[in-house]
Length: 84
Image 1 (cartoon, rainbow, N blue to C red):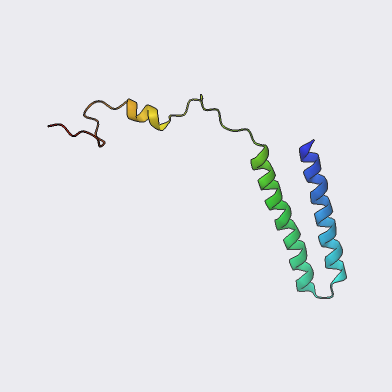
Image 2 (image 1 turned 120 degrees about the vertical axis):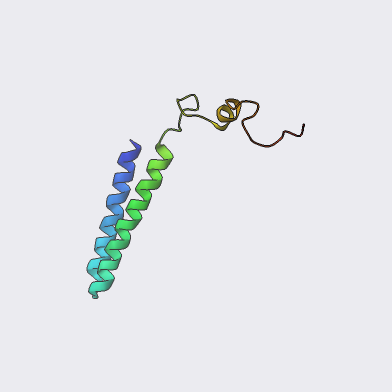
């Protein structure tokens, strides 16, 4: 449903851009208006996709920083060893 709303808004933005482009007498201004509409719709789609995408599962197969540090042995490097 939310993608349908984005498609409707995108169609409205592009229709407005074409209408403004038809009203201008300069070809460069018309092209820039349509290009701005396409860029605006692309940015909106990217942001919309980022907002709606699910967050990655923290229990997945990836390794976190805690696992990497815990897997090192006592001589595995790193700081914090003040003894002699």
